[in-house]
Length: 314
Length: 314
Image 1 (cartoon, rainbow over the protein chains, first blue to last red):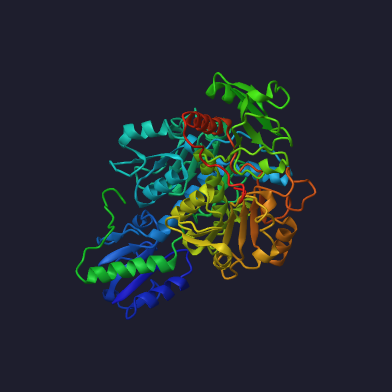
Image 2 (image 1 turned 135 degrees about the horizontal axis):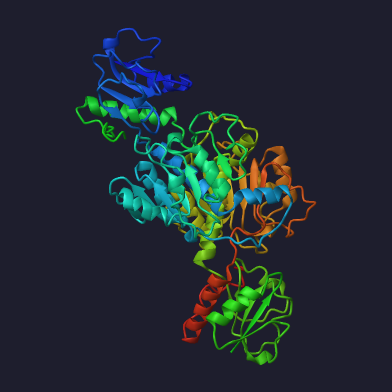
């Protein structure tokens, strides 16, 4: 009846408070305070220190505390128990807020209007396409990609999505596989990356991919939104594509190295909008509620939901 | 078979081009080029010069070329024929783009993150409510308000709306009348003004109204979005409310005087975001298509749609 909370870089206090509140009667320990290792039933991980989950003979499952599970696999001593992803409406909705916000910032030329305001310039005659004129392509049609797709379509964007294997999301055009990727990119003005980070997707946002994006769109060039994982993108290629006009602009929430180093030219690029990896923050309240529900169901004899397939890595 | 195009402050050329294309066989004249006044069947107005529509004995209807018809009533010599409002999906969708964009800019603290980027500050630990935590109140539930309400609700905001007379918009809480206005304001964190400008609504966005907004919200104070009409707002009261904390911030697309004078302190206020009355631009293509469809239907014997009630002014 012990839960091991193994995280790096986060404030533990709000997590401990929610765990005590929603899992009463359990002991909550950290790698520093752990006593009887055989008492640990479940581990909760966010970038847990390598080896922290080893030698737990009665461990039943590992829960990731944020979107994505690539951080769990960094541990070469990972025990062979189910790894559970977060599939949470709160986290999903926050991600879609970020995606819709940044799609609209680029559609409605908000940075240019901010500059005009700063200069006290009133110019209402700038060409303004409607959302319906803009083709959005979403890489990844999991819980996050499918929700963002639906919301972008509701706003009026012309939305398509791509996933590795066939998916069907209502109201949008769905592509899959290698051929499908080329076809979707060729009709994409705003590319939204919401893929998991796996060996297959690492570095996928590179020069070769950017060269396949539509060049006949209404925004003056294709635009990249990445709120998936920093490892998906090759930042040198993004900068080169921005400077040669292959990309018009980018909104980035994630980076190869985080926090983004002060020396990165992304910070000061006039057509890059940066947020500090907080597009969809894991709130302890929503995530602990999800985990407590899963544990309760599991202990009633139900199966764990949203278990990671170790072969695909998500 | 003559159409009179009577506008102020707009470039005529794109309108003339679309009128000739979509209404072939009609003569298109302006107040400057008009010959036989008895030949004029229809007048198209955007802030038409006072008196320009007088003495047209066979005039059948006046079409407004943009959202809102208050500009038509400035003419004391207005003939007594039906006045037709624009109800156009393109214009409506563009307005909702602006409303959703600005609601999300305030929700997601975009101006603060822009500043952080400028300062190369990486701070991911800022308190971030979800859209579901934020209560939006929409003033006006016509075609524009109802559409914005639905889209904001899809993004996840907790949306209510108010109209003078009872309305029913699915998925949102609907208020009406004077008591309903007070009740809605008391639960409003982001107020969206999409009212027509009438003698009853002129100056409605004033200190007395701001004082009735919710003070227990998650955004640090209520926020005003006005994309309706500049005449709805008392700018001195907005500035005072921002300075005393009664309002936290505002996004304004419309102003008492347009273009907004260089001397206006709104330009440089750090918590005011300005757009140059282009939240929903009338595109000649969509508007002329709507008018041509209406004329064709009318001449087949059908009734004109979206005729203004002169008693209420919208």
